[in-house]
Image (cartoon, rainbow, N blue to C red):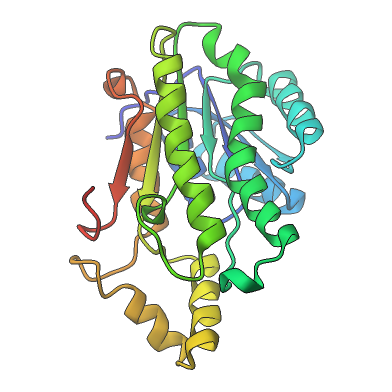
Length: 262
């Protein structure tokens, strides 16, 4: 039986309307956390919150959230506290990706990827930190990527944002080490999500290959022979948000089926 580490605590999951974020929100609810989901698609956030409440029976709420906007983040943080009473866990999961040769990445596209993936984590962490540090216990989990540790062609903007998120995790982990708030990152390999399948389609177009074949090829470096499932990420997030992970901070954990070990 799952230990309900979250009983009486509130977890915020950004980008929680679908994919890995949805799986993380579900698992943390099963651990006993009340759940606040923020998503740029407000309908997805509200629907996911409703489904989790029905399935698990914990308090939930879904809100519109643009993590790249300081105003939106401030409003969201206030709404969460007003609705659920506190913020004890922040999962910075919201992210975007696109596949482009560097010469085709215009400034707007570069800014979009970096603003959501990296600036968004900064804005959310800064806005919610007073809540996280107020009780001497808190958890921040940043969803990075294995390509936040090595470079990949056509993903210069995405790699830069995820390398930055790993560095942010380390720096804030040190900064908050005396507060009772731990800060860690999860670095998945290619995931079994619609977003990653879209990237496979884009890559297939660039290299003149079949999309399904390209998606399978992207999994070839994974010794366990499959893509990362959203539930794989959710299970690790559950541990990092538990009392058992109280001495683990500033780390970026690879969830790659053995595909990347540094």
